[in-house]
Length: 372
Image (cartoon, rainbow, N blue to C red; front, top):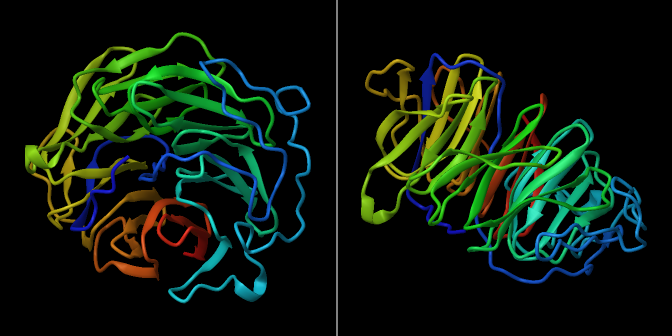
């Protein structure tokens, strides 16, 4: 994955969509083998090789928790931050420090999950803090992540050998849902299905049942599909496009069950995030510093807010939350002046729950939280 972020972010809102919210996360890191160093607890389950399933170190059943997991305080070197060192200078609290390159992030009712891209791991920690549990290790660039009530899903973003994987939220057997992907990236879920973008030569949006099975190609010929969100009727994504393409990014949708792909917006400046809240579709741009809104049936986008450089975005009924440009920022769903919730050297992934905002910072190696 690239980090081609340093210019200006825009948030776009596209009126007229329906469905539940979806929270993509993004960005980068170098490929490196993971280890169990630095205060992490729990038996590490290696990533599957060659598309096969991996079992727990003791051959346990799928869904069994890793050995050694606990909720006791972990050491600061790569572990959960203790109370004495948890507060961050820029605002918020560090849940974990010493990560190699924390990237994608997701939350459920009790825990925070993230990928360590350079460390090759998938990890979790209780929202209240404590020991870090390593759910998977030895991966080559785990990227974005999503979670439901029982399982964690993530993309393993390597050229030509990329995979889409899952494991229980308690750890255990890792299941390969898709292999041989060219560069799987963003990931989203509905009740029965996993959706992802493949943003290298394949330029595709794909899906597979959560229980495994046949992969369905929803769209092909896309130019760098980057972020993804899903409603009961549609899948939405952004086509980031490269520098050579100029400001030619797109916001796209496909109607599920029909294969009908529609372009919702063009001429976007490297859109990197997309999310759905109620009847609105929001997206983030990386470069120009404008924010767009448009009716679903057409019309020129208009400005919601302008924020410096972005890596990812989350949205819920309380607003749009952006990571990037050295800050974690909140914008009202109706627009207005952005509010900086925290400053952070290189905020990368972002997720929200009803009361808090969570983010990863790939430069400082932290996973952090701040109240809304």
